[in-house]
Image (tube, rainbow, N blue to C red; front, side):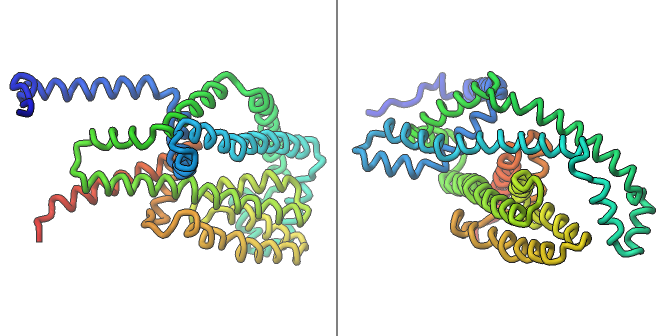
Length: 358
């Protein structure tokens, strides 16, 4: 005869304190883990994105999940983390050199702006003058002052990035450590997590599919597309002989996370400057390359990398990405769209449950 639940422990008077205990304990745990939220978030993302690799290796090696997780994590470090760190250091150095060149006058910002203003049509020049932007000398002073601050910022952070601060080392260790166990035991942990959710099984499957889709789309899709667009944009600027092409390509990669506008916020003003200063074929070539190559990367690569699952509308992605970055920094480009997905999925499930059955 199966054991029946004890009347004492199953009574409503006992369930309510237990709920409060779960809530208080969960809030306390979140407060403890909050300083490491970035490392834990990226550990979860690595486990989610690279779990198919771990499963394939585990199957090939006779179910040795730990060895497969270690091999997968090592591959992520060699292919993703180390090149990313090297790129960050290079960008910091190039940014510092560019700012110092502007501040010292090696790059004559005044002459560049003067040529640009001279090439502008009279109505547009008068409009800029009306808003106080037409004074080239004043603009130069602002640019040089900003360049000095940027140079100090980059110079102060090159050593930090190169030597790896204690905080960075701790985050990297914690992220790798947690990612290993999530890769090894992810299926069991995920099953226990979703089993504890107080939702119907159909709702759990719907919510899990939505969350997994948006995380993969944001990281595997948006991030890879951004890197490709930034690399192509940097190579195009390098071919045209533009200074700080690597830095401009990195800025394009970051802005490519924003739909609709993205990398055009960088290459289009540069192309217009080239046209305004008489470099007509260079400007036209950059516009053609930006429109026909960089601009089409999103439409060509995203379906391949992400699939044709339902995505958030572009305007929702744009707003939640900007809001997430403004809220918590660079990690917000993942958390913003993820929270939007969970919110919309929850409202959809709630609305569906309230509708009477047909």
